[in-house]
Image 1: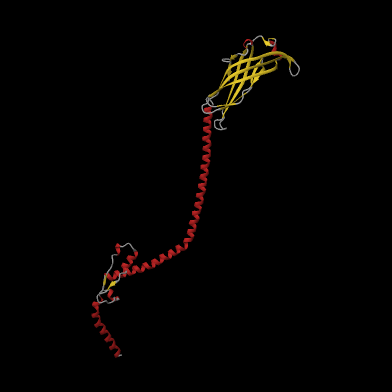
Image 2: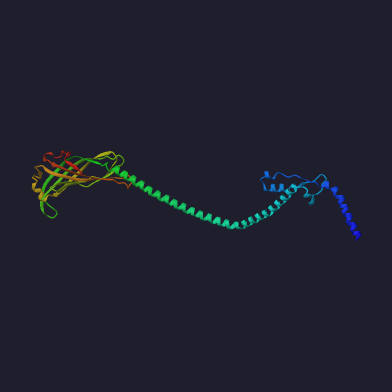
Amino acid sequence: MSAHLSKTDSEVSSLSQSSPARSPRRQMYYVQSPSRDSHDGEKTTNSLNSTPVLSPMGSPPHSHSNSSLGPHSSRESSSTRLSGSLKPHRKHNGSRKDRTNNKQPWKEFDAIEEEGLLDGEGDYNGLHRRRCYFLAFIVGFFVLFTTFSLILWGASKPQKPKITMKSISFNEFGVQAGADFSGVSTEMVSMNCTVRLTYRNTATFFGVHVTSTPLDLSYSQLTVATGSIRKFYQSRKSQRSLIVTMKGSHIPLYGGGANLASLDGAPTQPVPFTLNFMVRSRAYVLGRLVKPKFYKRVQCWVTMDPKKMNKAISLNNKCIYT
């Protein structure tokens, strides 16, 4: 027992003797970087976990010497706690990222599906919009075309062709007794005459196709001679002269011949006649879509003088045009 106590006293005395000698060596100096001026989290942690710079003797630090440092030791401990608290937080954030990554495929699927729906809706809207544009184009085209056609039609209507009757000449006229196809006895007339007229197209931007009804020369409402005008085309702002031959052969007069005086088959008195026909003109302004038509009815009153056979009789002021 006494040996053990003596051993303990010796150890205590040795420790007490050695501690004053080592105390100068335990002084440490710390270099701490300014963490407040840095915006990087890693640099802040590294500055808080700054490595202590030992004294020239190179003694390692001890826990009981930290208490003698005062504010420096408190900063070190706070930096240690801060670094320790940040590390689990980073792990926690990493776990959240992992959970986010685990949920990311579903979100990507939802995003892809939503984008597909939006793309499909956009395609439908684009197709619907194109259809509307197409229908609007068709309607607008028909409206413009119809308006243009009406304008052409309205502009062409006042440009009517002009017909002028010039003269008529009686080349032959004879009266003789005969019988019709049923065997009824009556006076019969044979005659030949020539009619001259001019046709003028007054249109400035289209030509016309011209036809005519037969020219009828009647006496007492009985047609005694007929003629026709051949179909022709008249260009714009132009005219032509027409000569029509009218003939009648063995035309029965029935009761109308009672007032017709004749000698040896030739009339002895003037014979009144009426000339009737109608001229039809058609223009193709815009193909066959705009086709203005013009009708002109001509009616003339003329008297044949037996003394002026084969001479032209003027028809001026003897005709009406309707």
